[in-house]
Image 1: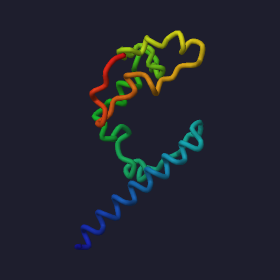
Image 2 (image 1 turned 120 degrees about the vertical axis):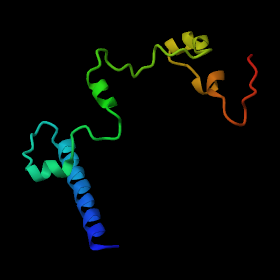
Image 3 (image 1 turned 135 degrees about the vertical axis):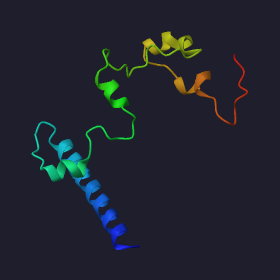
Length: 110
């Protein structure tokens, strides 16, 4: 490996280490502002350079909160045990929609 390639690799490794360090600091102290030198900012690169194609920007501007409960999912057969679910004795792992796999795709409905 030539000296020039070694220097490029070292610079890239340093940039990644700087970004990882700042990310860890911000995770530990999310309310703290960090003063970055121009060299730090250059090492970190553009703010939204994250291989996501800008998807994170759309998520930040969303109008509705994320529904992590999945109440609006349409799962065939999931309503069959709603009464049991309401009293807390649902047996979801035995529901027909939970049993599919490569070995048992040919399940019959009861």
